[in-house]
Length: 508
Ligand SMILES: Nc1ncnc2c1ncn2[C@@H]1O[C@H](COP(=O)(O)OP(=O)(O)OP(=O)(O)O)[C@@H](O)[C@H]1O
Ligand SMILES: [Mg+2]
Image 1 (cartoon, helix red, strand yellow):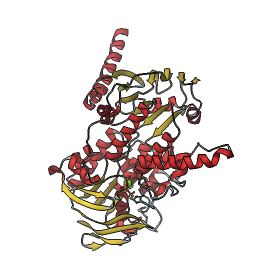
Image 2 (cartoon, helix red, strand yellow; image 1 turned 30 degrees about the horizontal axis):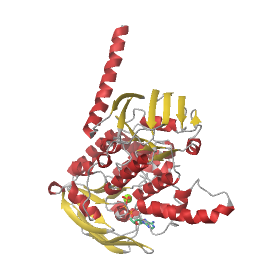
Image 3 (cartoon, rainbow, N blue to C red; image 1 turned 90 degrees about the horizontal axis):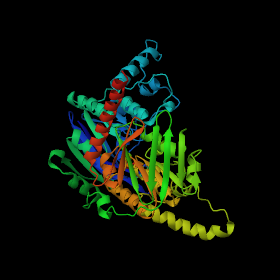
Image 4 (cartoon, rainbow, N blue to C red; image 1 turned 135 degrees about the vertical axis):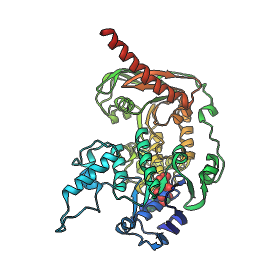
């Protein structure tokens, strides 16, 4: 058993964790829940030895863990998959996987062959088809997150800690991870599982500890606890889980077209036509990896594509994302590390980037207005922070995501294109963001949103386009239900496959 006693962490004046206690029991999966910035990752980092507690103790099988020592944590059987990953981008896949636990040969040399073999084994277990020699920097984000998990699994831990490990994964990858994790549990390991996704928590966890403002609210058995009760623990009040779409109604008048695309074609897209009107939120659904990401990136000029594009005051494809941004077409990605925040810059700079005043005469007045505007946005989005000048990397993951939203809002866009925008965002903030998207639409912005979460699409969109193999195969309107979207995604694929078979049969 692993027991945490009164863990406290202060960062200067910020108290990230104020005396948290919990126990991990072998053979169980324990969820750690809480709003963005409630202290989950701080607790996780202390288990991994990368952050030293200000106060408190950790006991592993009746032995006191030497805190602040990653090597000792590994030695005690604790392995952690970190939220923002701990990989070294320039190093190879295999070297990353075995980092810190390199097998050595007789003379004490690092055994290269053993490293490769052990790495291959883990890649195989995760069904990750990548060569062990490539540098990690060359891999797509989801592969990097799987490697981060692999790096923990390779240690054959007795205590496995997963901090939002599933946030960047595709559905089938999550399923694979869960079967591995449940296997470990059955062999007697204890797992601490941090996630904002309730369906995942209910699917695999036995108990849940909820943190609020760095303090433990309580630990509950999940079979006896409802979602609503957990959320109430998390935020200290009841909130309605009703989708926002129904709250504001679906009657916004369609005015002018904000975006019109014709025959978008490249290796991943097979001729996509698309229209987004002012005041409309259009969803992009479908099974994973059917060209959704390519479509969004093609629209903002991030990848090469043929076809035609028209937006307000602009005709033709965009050369690159800044060209799109100049024309009022903004992009928000859930992949905030790679395409988003500037960690070493302040909250203020991150929000105001690209909006620098040019005329000195205006500057002062503008500065005052600007400060207020930034403060309003930060408040509206409930970004947990202590000062607007603090570095963004000191914020919790979900709060970094909110900074991206604030930046987009500050830029007064015509069209906003969103790729999995609420990845890693807690439930109440997610509702807040959905409300915000609705109010942007209400102000005449056209929104296009891809999400891996059908519940999110159903909750916020006016209509949903289903993609299959790089084309839009169906459009859903009216009363959107998550199950309808899921069903249409699967059926869309089947009927398209069927069509393919027919044409083949015809031509025979
Ligand atoms: N290095 C740091 N310096 C200053 N403050 C920090 C640092 N790391 C974390 N904090 C603060 O500690 C608090 C808890 O952050 P933590 O990352 O543990 O939250 P979290 O529960 O993991 O949130 P999320 O769900 O967004 O990942 C936040 O207010 C954060 O701003
Ligand atoms: Mg976190």
